[in-house]
Image 1 (cartoon, one colour):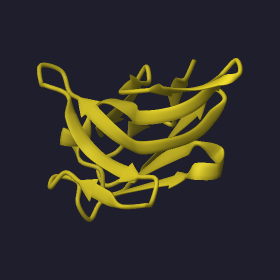
Image 2 (cartoon, helix red, strand yellow):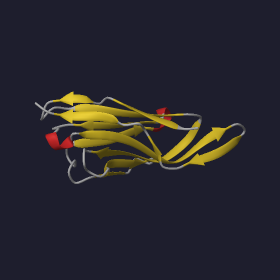
Image 3 (cartoon, helix red, strand yellow):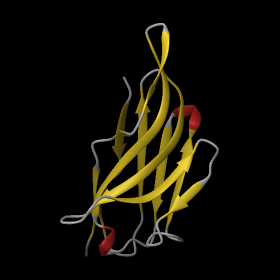
Image 4 (cartoon, rainbow, N blue to C red):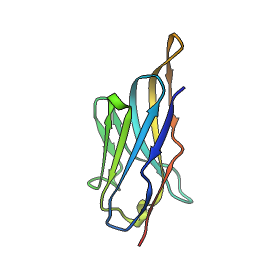
Length: 125
């Protein structure tokens, strides 16, 4: 079993900064790709940024230059540093991990497209 848990959300003023963390738990050998998504009220969930195990990153145009994604493979943890936050960044932010190799009993298994429960980020004065 693999689970993801986000932390770090909250209320911040426009122009402020906030950092999110996502920890993957379980007997994990490796995680190929991890990403942050967000969903604002009445809108579809969208990709914010993602990162491969090798460190390659992609960002949504709306956050380029303001957000930075990173990960610590040894800790199975991913981060999102958000700077110069805008009211339109308000959303529930979700952690996603794909192609996870983990141990279950005496065998190695794979999990795909695993989601965290989400953390609320509100940007408001």
